[in-house]
Length: 267
Image (cartoon, rainbow, N blue to C red):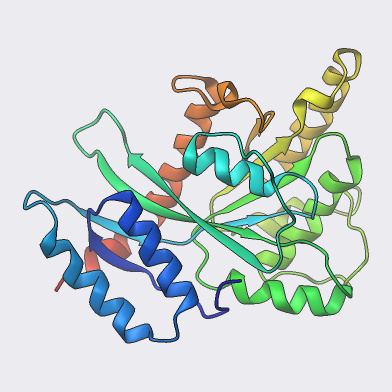
C-alpha cells in the first residue's frame, strides 16, 4: 500500500516509461522524500541527450468497490486486459503516457499518474476520511460506475461532491439525481470524465434503456461519457470515439495546469 503523503508535482525530463514507474513506486513507498526529488532531477542526465521536458501530475479515479476500476486503470496504462483483478485497498498507482494535442505543433508527451482509490471497506466515516487524503492536488477526476448496477451510478453524485470538497450531505445518505443541483458544479474547474464498465454484461434488449439513463448522468456532471468492457481493448482502440473522448479529457487536464507549467523552474 502506498504512503499516504501527498504526491509531488514536478517538471521532469522525458524518461523511459519503466524508469518513471519505478520513480512512482519509490515516491509512494519510501520515506526519503528529498532523495526522490534528487533522483528525479539527476537521472535524466544519464538518459539520451535529446530529451523533452514533461510534466508529472496526479489523477484520481473515483467510484465504489467492484465496478472494475483496477481493470480500467490497467487497460488505460498498459493497453492490456488485467488477467486477475483484485480488490483495491487504500490506493494503487499506475502511469499512462499521453500525447498532448497530438498531431499539432503544440504536441508534447506527458506522464500521468492514475490513482485507483479503494471503495467502501470498514465503516463509512473512517473510509471517507481515509479517501480524503488522496483528493489533495487533484488535476482531474474519472468517475467510474458499473452499468449493471444502477446504485453504483447514483452513488457517483455523493462521490463527486466528496472528492470536490462539497460533500454537504451526511455520510451514508444516497444522493440521487432527484436531489442533485447542477449549480453545485457550475464553478468546478477540475475536468471530469464518466466511465461505465461491464457493458458486455448488459443484454441487447436492455442496452438502450441503460445507456439513455447514463447519458443523463454524464450531462449532470457536464462531462463526456465512455461506456466499455474492460476485458476488450477494442473499446479504446486508436481512432475510436472512446479513444478520442479519452484524449480530449487528458488534454483538458493539461490545459488546466498549463499556466502552472510555465512557472516551474527546471534544475
